[in-house]
Image (cartoon, rainbow, N blue to C red):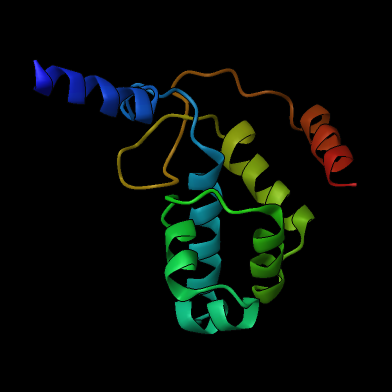
Length: 133
């Protein structure tokens, strides 16, 4: 009985099982973007953490999608990487709305919705830009 209770608690804490989750978590998408951008710039986790004045373990957790960072912390990391909020929103839009979503299973931030209707880019681009303004 204890095992089933613990399993139920684990499932409740996680919410829907990761395999069943239809939409990605924002923290996974943002973390993947931050890590990819940092790697493209050839910077270490330590360099970005120090520049953003965020602890190295905390930034690592953010990049892995394990921590839901505050907007203030994210803004500091974006600035450190030379990104603006508009850059981040545009990238997230491209990763979700334009290509659709479904979990590929390759890692955090790897999503694509199979068979989903891909909306017209002009309408959604205007919506994203209005959010960024």
